Length: 378
Image 1 (cartoon, one colour):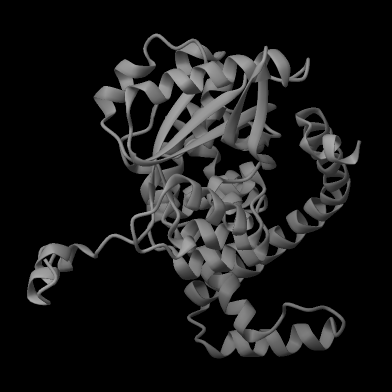
Image 2 (cartoon, rainbow, N blue to C red):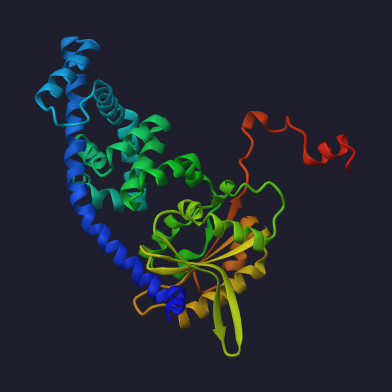
């Protein structure tokens, strides 16, 4: 009975829901405390900047302010001179015209606008530009201080900074998840063309937008440490062995259900490579792993699996199951035609096992064939 529960999508979905409710109860208090602290840090940073500009005070004012505040509030942490300098940077970086202009740009994007307007009341007005002075600290207050420090330290572009702030607030990224996403270049990959799916024609508009956010155009599997050609089963095994890293790469909200998940239809049985449940989409998400390039028949097989999952495994209040085909490479036009006639939501994405060479080194290193010839192995 216990084994069947573990493999049940219903139990996995229910367990995810219970975990979510418990976390929400804890987070509601933590968010209120975090908001007050971030707004306090914003005011301190603003005060330092304004006084230095108005009075011409130099660096010594920060050291003096730190000493006086620590004397007055001896039991309070975060008042070191180093942290006061960070508050100053925090205020200056998020009030730069380049950053506030990026918020205005985001507001013109339909998907981002809905989240920003829901999360920051000051942006609900028609005159967003006028309200940015109040909106920016409220947006910053959605994200913990430690996350801000990592973003300010590791990300330079205003557009990228806003991307990571918005994603952290929207998806509740932990600091480890944020660091992983920055390291994997999530912002750069979000800009890359090549997301191929049929979500708009197979899902309601609001759900299609969320599914689009959850799907990446490519997945960085460098953490597997694979440097040779690999078969599908070995790739699957390595992903399961490093499941935590794989879930971090997939993004927030994925709950693992099973590997080689068994489906039955009549006297036959079929196996989905990896099955997840996404607690925000409220959908089962089936992954098929392909060691080579995308082939049109993969879409038909996935469509079949999704029909069976919807019929036999989906809970009553779940949305349609979603399929993601992970392959070594794909031709977007071929994928588009392969998905045209499919009635289930399917996405196709590439995976990357090794980092690509920096631009300045491309074409300057020998190919594997040239190395083999030089070593007399060809």
